[in-house]
Length: 326
Image (cartoon, rainbow, N blue to C red; front, side):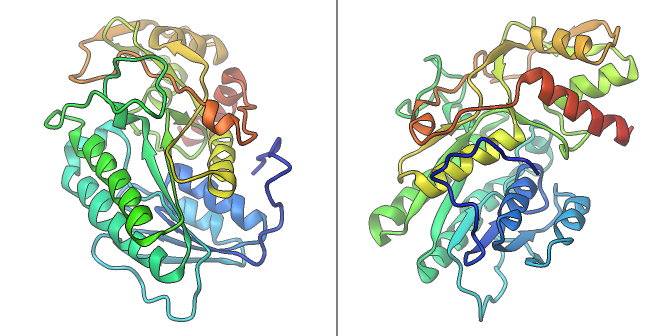
């Protein structure tokens, strides 16, 4: 994996460090694991495959210093008798809208009980802890772009609440461990991310549009397509996450790409990039779907991060992955 353009303040050799990464079989976490394995670290991955891919674990298992345990982190963690962790990363939660209807209670439990177990482990190991939160904590935002000091506009009983509210709880839990037990914590709020290894039936904008364009089907737009999103390529996200983990403080950081597109523009861009003649079709907008979503990334930029992969380049790489899947 190429995560070039990394700040010179970040270490390229982590061979003396040990990571625990929950959710290792997932889309973004598999890249995070790979990043640290390529820097020589020992990485322990956990996943129960509720949405993760065994293919991702096969990729990681080619690295000698990768160790995997299948487990459900909100039930129990493995007995790490002879391991001392330097970093514990909480990346285990399903994050796709299609999951919110199917496994809402599992999502709530992994972000509450699962996060608690990981924080307790971090406290025992004196390890640095990172909570991968989400832009969804802002809900349907009333300010634009979103800054970390904004406390959000969230429906606690809406169709997305199992994810939005459990992530807000996970942030509160993380901050409580920082305040009460002095655990060295980090919180990141991830904005829309895309790239190879996404689930083809993920239900999110980019895989939906790419799959429809590749098949020549109509591209389905919810609402009138005027709602906006900011799309960050996965290696840029991993780079931003590392800046926060290694150089940041305990307060939340938005991580993503501030380039903003309407959903209609994204569909037209994908059509053009894939040389597809798919037509656009429109369906009703789901409840509580955010109208505008764009991060202010000044805080993470102050650590030396800036996105490097253009939307066109990222789409080309992602489309290649999906072509091989179809």
